Image 1: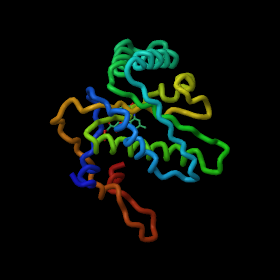
Image 2: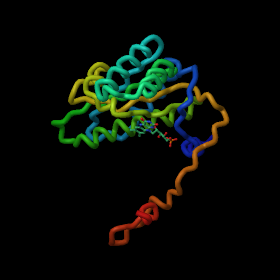
Image 3: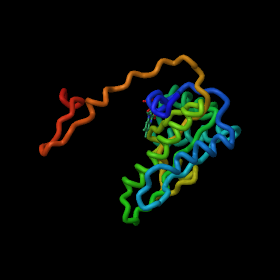
Image 4: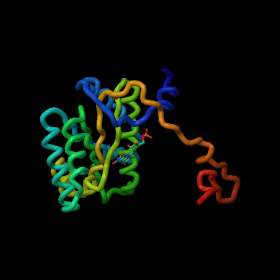
Length: 198
Ligand SMILES: Cc1cc2nc3c(=O)[nH]c(=O)nc-3n(C[C@H](O)[C@H](O)[C@H](O)COP(=O)(O)O)c2cc1C
């Protein structure tokens, strides 16, 4: 596959099985995150690898967070999250090491973390692995973030589930036409086809 074909064929993979990337594969994959655009070279990205026996421990912290946020969280939702965090081949907690007092605005620091995560997703795809970025309200729970290692002002940006795609023939999702999201500015505010029905 050419690099363009690889980019055009990437899709999030939710159904993942072993193996996860080896330590050296993971090191290469994470190196791509260090290529994300980063205003001020603040390096706000942080990666916490959760695998093996740490997964059920993480799952219990996730469940505790869910119950902290909603004491009446549905049991089915709790069971599903516990199962996914216990059994995914690898989980990468995405941390944001934020500097509120820096001249670089927080939103730019957060976007750098997102750009790094996108590189990781592309690198997973390029190396035959798969991943999906998940969040949910637990991502904004400061207690959970601190338990993982991100005490305020630092935060979580979510989690990447990582492994080998289980279904080899999963059809690629339909993607929007980029023309609908593109306009040429000629002096007046642009209108996008994507927004024309709003
Ligand atoms: C910051 C962020 C958080 C996300 N959180 C969730 C989530 O909690 N659950 C979920 O099903 N998808 C979530 N998604 C969307 C998936 O990661 C994925 O993009 C989506 O399933 C579409 O797949 P695609 O990446 O192939 O287009 C999130 C995406 C982003 C960028």
